[in-house]
Length: 386
Image 1 (cartoon, one colour):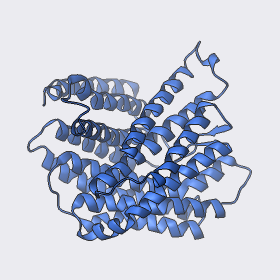
Image 2 (cartoon, helix red, strand yellow):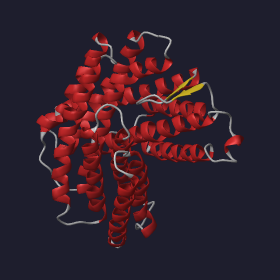
Image 3 (tube, one colour):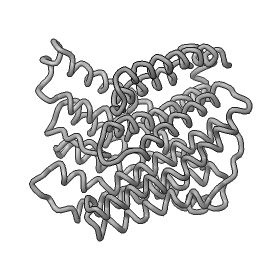
């Protein structure tokens, strides 16, 4: 329960930072905070909820599915690292930098926290690595997919470590941290892809054929990034092309195929958890479509991001309720609990629709009205499921 407890704690603190983000931008209240504190709170929100929180939940799944006891010695660095990350955000230390993959605060406390947290991730990946290698080919589908997350979690800190030693420190701080976290950050996205597919399989609660040749795509690109970090400038055209193809092929093909398979299987015998699966897959397919449509940098990038994140979050929320019931903390899901995943989708939808950018405001308004009407009808039937 160590990692599950860290998941709950980090999500709660990440949510508190989200509240601080809103207050720090509110006229009349923003003056209560130091200048640019908004960015510290934003870093705290993303790093606590979407990095620490999702990783803690994933490692909890490793222990649960691979049936291994937790080890406090390998958990402690991650716990201490999280407190240092959250503390440096809360107290506004250093300079907050809104770079990709690991939003950063330029301060020794933050760097120490990030290092300790990823050390905890690395130590746990070492504990599960023998089982991951064994189950990649011969295990069931869930264990095979989780094995890819173990392998990639082993590679990611090593990629960051190599990047630290061979990334030149120039005058442009933003470019330095972009290069530092580029390949390792993309490996992290492969971890998230493996987590997402695992969520779908767990919510489906039915056997799915193990397509190990697709699972191979989830590890081939991170292995390539590990070696590319040694020889390539991550921000070169070759480095960016490599990571773009990783998204399109390495993540896109396995997630879309498994998403469609679980979607078809889920609609036969819908219940609350399978309805969440349908919602999660639908969101992901929408986000993936926007991702494939992106050319350069436009406002579809945040729309793609929020939609994909929503697909992960609704699955995590549903599984959290499932496990809380199994642990005896909840007897039955009420209407409020059932509405929480749906409300998460609504928030991310409005963030995405505000960012999608290419359509006229009139068209966006009509689309929003139609989707709101459809989702209201779906919610009424959703809340009635046992």
